[in-house]
Amino acid sequence: MNNIVIVRVDEIGLKSGNKMLFMKQLKNNIESKFKDLFSCKILGNRIYLFPKKTFNNRDLDNLGKIFGISSYSVAKKIDKDFEKMEEEAYKLVIEALNNDFDSCKSFRVSVNRADKSFPMISPEIAARIGEYVLSNIPSLTVDLTQPDINIEIDIRPEGVYLFKERVRGPSGLPVGVSSTGTVLLSGGIDSPVAALLMLRRGMVINGVNFYSPPFTGPKSLDKIIKISSIISEYTPFPFHLYVVPLTKIQMLFKDLEENQFSVVLQRRSMMRIADKISNLTGTKVLITGESLGQVASQTVENILTISESTQKVIFRPLIGSTKNETIEISKKFGLYETSILPYEDSCSVFVPQNPATKAQLRKIKQIESYLPEVSVLEDEVINESKKYEIRDGKIEEIDVFKMVKGGIL
Ligand SMILES: Nc1ncnc2c1ncn2[C@@H]1O[C@H](COP(=O)(O)OP(=O)(O)OP(=O)(O)O)[C@@H](O)[C@H]1O
Image 1: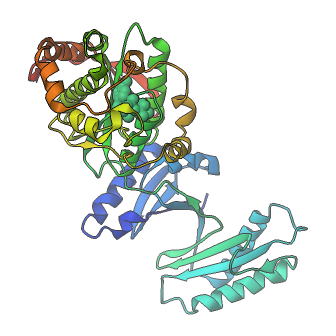
Image 2: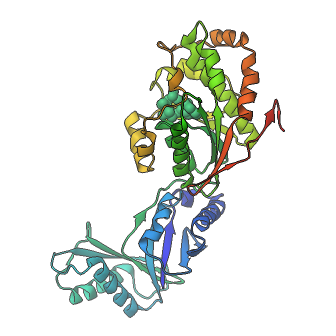
């Protein structure tokens, strides 16, 4: 049981003033996912995980979903004793060979001597331990640039760590260090990726989804909950999803004579509702998955007209991305297979034949001025929304919050 896990950070290490705050948040985030398995300790730019019970490498998979971690290694900690270092390095090579002594594998020993009081310099330690390993396993060759097996020896004041592998983490900043946002979360490919990208910058988020009963059925709801559940695996905070029935507002826009503006009108309504939910839940910004020029509603003119419906800043992390790039990220985060399930999204049900690509604000405001009931309906649908709390993939429907203009009932 003397294996420990070393967690490394990249960006956090560069933050001078906030570094300790960020490290503590990362430590809390790791503890919240691994409280039964490890106790954690910050030492310099690293976090060390001490096992409370035996673990195997698969138990560590969730470290790949904790933003802020650049890499981690399962390491053996020993005393600062040269003979023990030789012995453990040899054992690690044997482990890495996995009983394959026939195919000619190459290896390297890399030494980091952070404790300068250790009486030998790094190249000397590497060379001597390399010789020791070679003398015991003559089928090996040495390769200093691209070895099959890289044994790392890290000599620090508190002891020596040896490991043979660095597993890459998801990098970024720990969730909890970058304020809060509300993502307009559709069942498509883009907005779930936008949500993950904001989590990766350390933001705590909740989500608002619009659905159109009875035009969108229970399978669409299942899909958005499944997407939220995947998102929740990347945050230590519960992910709250507000599901808002938009149908009565959409019907109003659909029946307009000038229904080419219905998409922009609908989006403005979504923004106002999301703005209110953001205020009710205390988040600071809105987030969407828009990407410039991707669909008719995402021209600069339409985006400006849509943005005007809220005072809040809207983060659009995908604005400059290509569809393929977004798909790549979606796959990387394990979202893609769910995002492409063929269930109708609320908006696609009500798209006119020729949606306006340059909806002028003046025109849109004029139409809205003929529809004062929209604002009443927006409050109504917030009252009718469902709220789900999703934590580590576990879903619970909780209290529907009630709202009247300007406050919570
Ligand atoms: N039903 C919905 N519920 C919540 N937000 C939505 C919904 N539909 C669209 N949005 C928000 O508006 C943005 C633009 O949507 P649009 O349908 O124009 O583009 P999209 O590329 O299909 O987006 P996505 O892939 O995220 O569905 C979405 O990224 C999302 O943030």
